[in-house]
Image 1: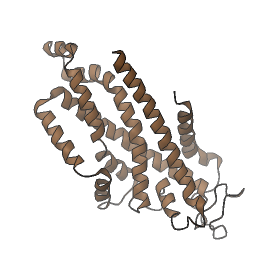
Image 2 (image 1 turned 135 degrees about the vertical axis):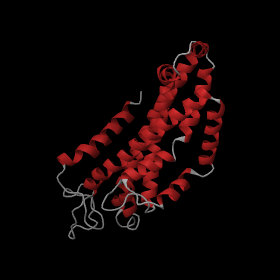
Image 3 (image 1 turned 30 degrees about the vertical axis):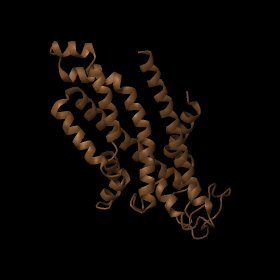
Image 4 (image 1 turned 120 degrees about the horizontal axis):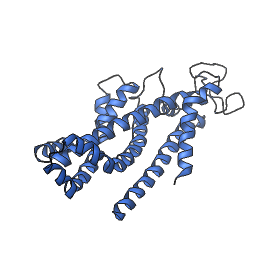
Length: 265
């Protein structure tokens, strides 16, 4: 079990959402006397080019980045679960429509589709959650659809259909527990992907708008001074790396458990 990755992930969440309780410096306070100050006892992770404390900004930005990551991954995975299971169970016209919609979304590279959508709206945390969810459900849906086809061909599902058991009951009572491992694997992958997507958009200036901040915007703010103030970009980049790396390890572990269960069955 990836204990280290889980511990790192929990530490990052606690740092982002509870750190400001113990660290009194405000993330928005400007200080003209502490511009681009390197890490010190006064500013543990240094300051940016406006004299704002990097540690305090990492805590504040982490709340936004993690909210976007978890929120968009949850919605995208739920959309993929519902649409994929319905396509695999009902088949026929619903499955054909599903294939057409998925192929339509996959025609465009996901990140370019994100860029196209974000360029027409004023980005905020909730807007990015919706947009990343809209562009990120297809992979989960295809995996769920494939597994749903296998479940539908099982004898006990055919018996339930012959017995006129409610289709919703079949989906929620029999499909959901079998599809749950795939959902959780997709969700953990989705959180990391959403955080990277938000960071990429913010780095390009199309993500979170000031005065809000995220790890991506903090990272972007340091790109022009990286040669003289490495800490401005290094620490938000480190946070993004720790979260995505931990999530990948957890996802791989969940995938291994799912594969072992399938082999045993």
